[in-house]
Length: 176
Image (tube, rainbow, N blue to C red; front, side, top):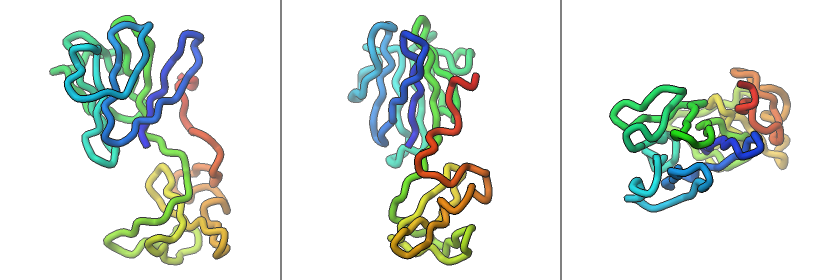
């Protein structure tokens, strides 16, 4: 799930998950807080973030003229599709960072058009079987009842992410 890193008044970072299908309102004044809103609220805000797809995989920022900057630059045509680690800043407001990084979690595998093999054990991952999808897009078995603990066995074979379910985010704005 996409999320925003929000810098608070004491220079600490908070996380706001961006639920698919929601509209996130960035307020005009720094003292106001972000909120989940309804359509047609751009008049009350500097900008809104809205999911382009029902699954929340892609987000767009819509702003008033001169209302926000992305990565320090003005937004052409007042609309911008967001990318991972984009910095969003309203005129006098706090910084926000958009992130698409997902935390690993065990979920039933949805299946795919073609057979999917676990990169660790090379066995097929069947629809409905407990699995973990790495942030890089690779799926692993993670079924304690069947002894297929492929995700927690070691780091991701493709991107090197630690094979843990509680490691937290790999990237935070503190790294800047």
